[in-house]
Image (tube, rainbow, N blue to C red):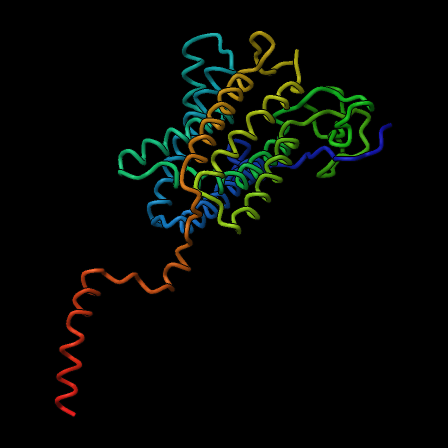
Length: 320
């Protein structure tokens, strides 16, 4: 029996009417991530001088397209259905699956289309969205952890990440609840959990962003960083993903679809860094500080005032 490190969550759902309509821990954590991420995105947008209502509108369309593309890509890429009708039924059912890389692509698509339709620069809104996404992604991946959506391979004691292994109550990738506790500890099997490990990465990234944001970094560093950091991390983590079980991710030439997407995301991040570093090294001025400073005087009014001041002085002298 292995000593317990990270317990195996077995949190129950809360039925509202029956099992067909219930509050699931996964859904609660994902909804929390969206709300917290949106709040941080709005805060960052205000620092960059963006209009609050416009930022909220951008978030709505990014989240909507993100979920749509996430769902469609999961059904079409990761799932195998015997007939076209079964595929269409899965596409029509929003509960049938979500793809994280598809969600990122959809959010970027929604952001880009919204900015083009509203005549707004993409980079300030993208930077704000990336700032909030880091924290929101942590809650989302914790939802994957409690739902056991992304199990990894079984671990040996010699594994360098052994301390991050989750104590599974069975040797299978998906275990039925064991006992009546909310967490099962002291299991005889330890397994990688992609949701937990990626959630820890998101937590570190979010903490770094919150700290970095206090020093007024140049525009674009958050969106460039999240791409260049997440791409390699996701590529490495998918190497640990469980194989040869029902529901395992398909592989082409030994790589999962997310690994191919991770390579593309990394390249996009490097291009963004080149673009960001080519811009003038000026940090954005927070709205709060700019609102307290006096507005710059209009050059024409200054010139007029200076030309009128001698005459005004002469008149005052005559009156005295």
